Image (tube, rainbow, N blue to C red; front, side, top):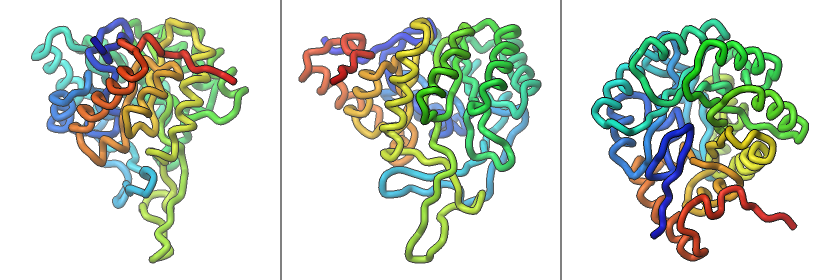
Length: 312
């Protein structure tokens, strides 16, 4: 019997797929839509200490091969998401949820984690180190010294399952340097990748950009980014301690894309741009497509092929 079940951060999931933070997770209605789909679980929007409206619209645009966005972290505030997931875990005992959080400095990260500690939440925290769409704020994940300092302070204060969402890296030495830092800490997983920051898409008819913030610069997602995402997943799979797992994110539109993420070493995947287009029903199609590929190749579980990419 074919199973797409997986284990991540010490919890078991009946499927290896979920939403990416930022998509179908703004409020309880969207989170419940993912909950009631074929997805294994959900991750919330990246909650900040206070609710945020985000960047001015238009701030999201679907392109031929994906999307460009400069959302600016709109969210209902961490308290909203904590209240929701704390209640939902009561309604669904035994199910594990993911709470995404992001502060704008170390003090805010620690305050967010203290709120989690003080709550009834029993799931996994995803610390977002990689939003490229907040004007005036650099991506933390590209400042290696700051990442090291943040993780040291975080794990001095927080001792429950926690993963980090990373930006894409493009140079082999950067994989080496970041993995050396990550391996120092008891991370549950890394999530690779967030969108490729500061792309530009042009409407040729009007000769204008298509989103308003940052003069049209925004994060690129979808089909464009899959090769970069696969490279990041596999590079970290090769370098990280084996007890640090990987969530693969980027360019997932079909079961084949999920198969390739897992082949590169991912234990779970998150879907963003394609979920925005199709809605949570997409998880039924993706599951069926992945199962068909596994059946054709004679695999009964994702562990049969996870990380077993061949080289020439």
